[in-house]
Length: 536
Ligand code: NOJ
Picture 1 (cartoon, protein in one colour):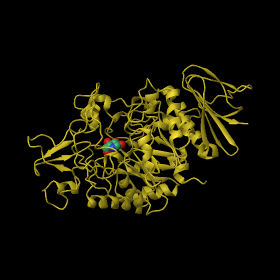
Picture 2 (picture 1 turned 180 degrees about the vertical axis):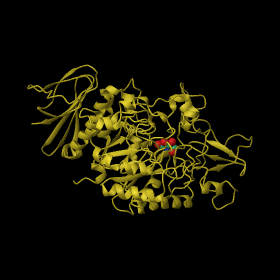
Picture 3 (picture 1 turned 135 degrees about the vertical axis):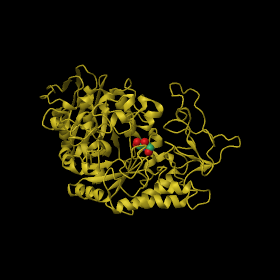
Picture 4 (picture 1 turned 90 degrees about the vertical axis):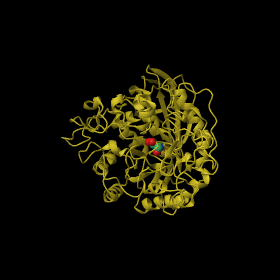
């Protein structure tokens, strides 16, 4: 069966603020993305997903949108976006945008109108409730960013609901006018030529109509004092009955246009997450965060070959034939993969990501193994970090992309006063320019793996099978017609010898070694080494 473009593609997430600053204000922008499209072609990726670039007061760095159908002047304008789409398409790159349906900014005209009175045309576009008779909050729900999920509004003398910051009021999707307006947003961008959507926090959009108190988790030790959300079971606000019908409507809207793709940000356990494929009528791909840790980030102590094999096997077993897999190793909400798994394993996980079955997504900067930024308390910009503490801040993975070893790492033009987050101090050694000219670099390994994947039917569409292997190793095969590959990964930092299930010759290696396969089919892998073998 021929694959769709998004099944063959390698996706690349761009966090526009941190990618490339073309103006010298210390913040990345859309012209910066355009300037780097040739770079992306050289790396070999096929599709970019842009985190939000819409007008926004930037309390949540663009995930608080004050106009869904425009571009923040900080990033450019609609014309720049049109140009970006055209220039990307000219290079055969697809463009996905972030669709943020759960909430707007409190500066959105809809909210400004809504808060004005209890009977204006948009009065019911957000979730408003009276205080309880004793003046207390309408229910016990907490915000994901810490504190209660309700904020008092003087004008209306009511509380409004916000699953995130108080500056991010939740839209009321039970109001058909809201739904229509939000589906029109989808149409607006699809008409402009984008190739798909990454839909933000899908599962919170549809809540219990009466919003009863959530049950309390008795043992929530380790949670910050104000982490009300983390101490509750979100049974009335997440993955709530009715959500699927809504997703189907968004998908129907997407399907008014040809050949587009819809990806969902869904932090749920495997079983629940897979329901978001629907009957092929919801998401093409609900993001698979298992390699991040499913519903949070994998505790580094638990990261092991066994952990990885178990999550991949469970996923593969659970997927139906029509459900296309995907893998994510990093994004703008979690610590850098090179920091999470350790720099020594950055090469190994690149091979993992690019040889598993399904669409891989690379987070910008991970192709050179950018590590967590040098963030101090004083540097914290992220609202989650401000409320829940430095260990919860997402600034670590949002520091400027390290393009070269010049003063501002090639992120901002020379003379720029400062960048919105500090440039990580290792940029003199770890930068894209240096790695592109080094045939042994992590960047070159990414380029080679992507190129190999493109020409390999087994990697693009072959079946996956894993094999029992010595502790700390993970062995699997990918097979399509007469192409049969074995991938052997050593997650230990010491040498490991593995008897291969099948004989063959090495075609890719994480560490540019000469053939490490002996004649009797035993392979001796160095610490953190991975290889791809073509079965004879
Ligand atoms: C998920 C996004 O990935 C995250 O960055 C954002 O803060 C929340 N959604 C709220 O929009």
